[in-house]
Amino acid sequence: MKKPVLGLSLFFLIVLFSVSTVQAGNGLKEYKKGLNLYHQGHYEEALELFQQAIDENLEFWQSFQMVGYCHFEMRQKEAAMKAFEESLDLNPNNPKLAKIYRDLQTGTLDIPVRPVANASTYYVTF
Image (cartoon, rainbow, N blue to C red; front, side):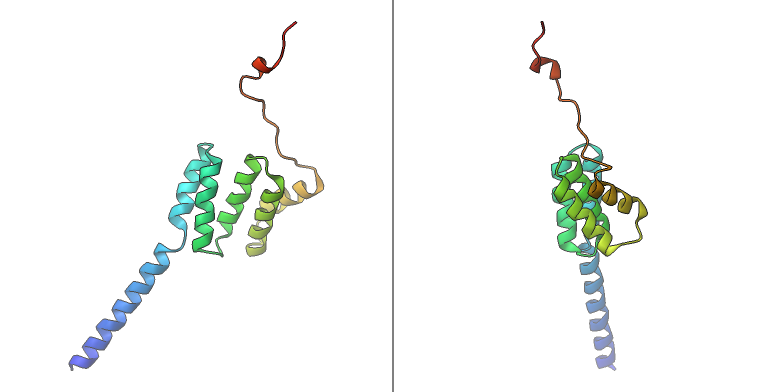
């Protein structure tokens, strides 16, 4: 009677360990931290976290998409397009991203140019 109980206990321990390992390694924690940093405008820091999430889960298309948005905000068009393409390869059912990607390819959408902080100090007044 002890062998079946011991075997069943061992089985549950293995299943429990497997589930906790999958949950710990799915990249969701890094993704959520990355989103928070992205919304605060900390694109480089967010990029690192999204890439960590991808390292933990190569099928995490949302992280690839956010990597693209980070590159876009950092004026790195080619890197943004590559990340968008990877996201769309994993999840082609994303019409909004597909349109952004297509518009970047055709030049309809380009990397935004933002005003330089304290731009008036760069100009000579007459």
